[in-house]
Image (cartoon, rainbow, N blue to C red):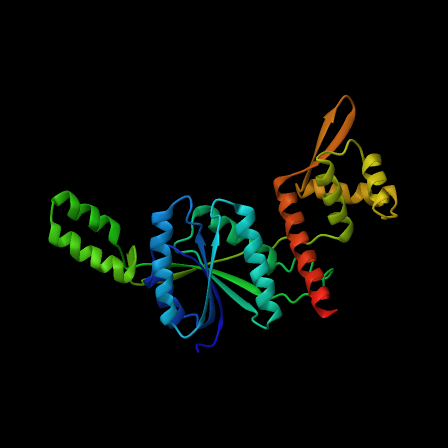
Length: 281
């Protein structure tokens, strides 16, 4: 079995750009393949699965999982959960190949890498193990689709058949010209109080005032001073994780999309932590 990290691949009409980097640059002991569910695009899903099935010739563990590739939250959550599991097993490096990933999957993968690599909330949840995510893109030697279209327009049946045979072997692109690594960017971590504020505001959709927020926090057994809450709210506003709306001299607070992603990440970690505790008991 190949030694090395764990690869995450977004399955599609690819083979060369999946296999070649694993053999030549990033040895792997496990490959996790995310493929689109077959209900919406059954033909595309079927082709993708056929290419991914061919990966089983590699001496590594292969896990194929169907996901909704049109849901940022679903992709983000699954990437985080799989990463946490692998880190727990002692695999501290996750490689994500985005060569065939849909645009939404690329965005979710990069966001997940930024959170994990920044060790967000690591000091709060010290029971969990954190590693690193590395994202890369494989530049092919040649894309086959333009040649296929040209051959079809020229009416060259023999050329179409040759290109199609090449497609069946390599996927939609041939060879591996270069590997381009995609950097992640550091994110600021948050405190437990920050997370409590985000969670409380999200639950109410909108909080009418700081005083209302404090009352709701106290209902959750948070015994904190107004000055502490005011300070943390200002910090969350600066980071654009919450937003304020002023109306008739009153200020209401609500979460931003970025704040909801922080909150989702926190809940994934807490859920993972709780499952670890239940397994130990």
